[in-house]
Every structure is written in C-alpha cells, then in structure tokens.
Image 1 (cartoon, rainbow, N blue to C red):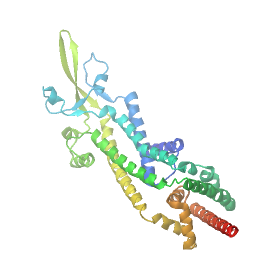
Image 2 (image 1 turned 90 degrees about the vertical axis):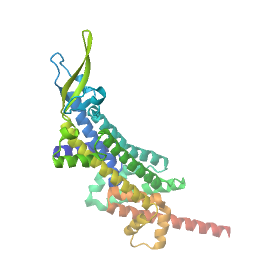
Image 3 (image 1 turned 180 degrees about the horizontal axis):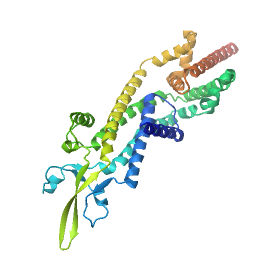
Length: 372
C-alpha cells in the first residue's frame, strides 16, 4: 500500500512541476491535483495491463489460438441456464470492462478543467494571479530557509515582494478589474458541479440493474456474504457469443471467459466511488462557504488579526485601497507562504497605503493653496 501512496505523491509532484499552480484551498488541491494524480495513475496502470498482460482468457476450441474477438465483444453474466432467445441472452451485458482505463483518463482530465478555467479567467481580470506566486520574490526557497539572515530576508523577500504585488493590485484596480473573487466563486461552483457529474458518470459506467447507489449496495452484499455469482457485479466468469462460418452453414458458438481484472476492478471502484463522493461533498461545501464569504466580512476580520495595533481609520483606508480582490489575494498569499511572512507583507501594504493616502492629501492641499 505504501508503494501506491508513494506513486500518487510522485505523480502529484510531477503535475505540480509541469502544471504549476498556487496552493489555493485544500479542496482545490484535492480536486485539481490529488484526484487528477490518483485517476491518472490508475488509468496508466490498468492500460498497461491491457497491452502487456492478459485481460481476458477464454476457453476456446483448439483451432482458435487467440481470443481477441471476445475482448472487444460485449460479455454477459453467467446464469444458471442458457436461454436460446438472443435478446434474453444479451440481457445483462458487461460494457465497462474494456473502457475502464480510458474512462478514468477522461475523468482525470475533467477534474483539471475548473482549474484551467480559473487560469483563463485570471488572465481576463487584469491581475496575473498565478504568475505572482511563482515570481522570484514568492518562490525563492533560499530566502525562506535562510533563517540566520532574517533582516536581508525581510528586505528582499517581503519588502520588495510586497511592492511587486501591491503595484499589481493597484494597476488592476485602476483598470477597474475587480472580479478575481467573483471569478474564483464561479470556478468553485463549476468545480462542485463537475465533481457531481464525475460521480454520476462513475455510477452510470457500472450500470447496475440492482442498486441506484452502487457503493453501499456492494459493501452490504460483501458484508452479508453475497458474491458476484448471485448479484452479477464484477463477474469473474462470463459468456461470450460469436458467429463463425462453416462450410454451407453459419454456426453460433458460446465460450466461457475469465475476466481477471474484475478482481481488482471491484476493489478499485469501491474506493473511487466513495472518494469521488467525498470530493463532490467537499467541493459543494467549499462553494457554499465562498458564496457566504462574498456577503460577509470574514476576510476583513482575518486582516484585522494581522494588524492589531492599527487604528480603525487607517485600517479602513487600507481596506479601501485593497478592495475585495486585494483581500482575496492576501488570503491566498497566506496559504502559499505562511502566516508569518504574510503578516509582514500586510504590514508593508499598510505602510504603502498610508504613504499613498498622505501623498494624495498633500497633493490636494498644495493644489488648493496654489489655486487660492
């Protein structure tokens, strides 16, 4: 089990290296990185068994050396007696067996779509949100680890980085691009809807004729000792019907086939069923939390916790200069670099907001005196 977890962590790191993205919230990482890594790794492993293994073994006559035809033919569950009516014989087909690796690959790509949409919306907002978190100021590991030189780290990493991000926020506000928080809320809704669609897709792929909720039903059967021979879920032995031409006749044959991978599919899909259900629930809760944050002042309260020694007037000027998008960006800076560096960032932002306010006030005073 530890080797599988290590492989998922390695795949997650690989995705983070080539498809760089900020840490964001835990639910965002769960959907766009961990779940993508999990589904992609499962798809790659299962696809390798289809090409370099024996996904199916059939009891065929000696003149048929290979049994590839039955691999791409619909199987059906073995019943106690064979019906001679073709429609009844094909009543319970097994349609998922060949397509599981490709379905998991499609799901892995689909889980990354909300993150891709988020990046596209950021490019339209006037503030290059992902770029700021991968700039030299924000991602320099040497500056983060150099605890012996705290003063130089403050100068380079936090003061210069604060100016870098502050200028971006002010420029974006001057262009009246103030929709980053709204765009993020839209992406959280898209992420929740996508998670439920993926869960429904997985449930429909197994096309159970017995259970509407497939996962709890299978677990209940396993707990009661009811195996696949009774329920027909993930059968190990199936029938394969095919037609072959003989001299002056067309003959229908039926052979028994063993589906080796269904032994693993049962455990894998049980895990994925509950995993995707949990992801969908968390994504929905995350979307509801962010919809509430658009109407409340929780983010402002977090800023006040960083700035306990400031007056209400200076804090109001600071929040007015930041705007909702600026508060949202500060929240994500704290997620990416930690609370202590973020507190120093916010202190520098506060000083720059004060300088901006007093420079404007002095300018207005000079203009008023000159006009008088």
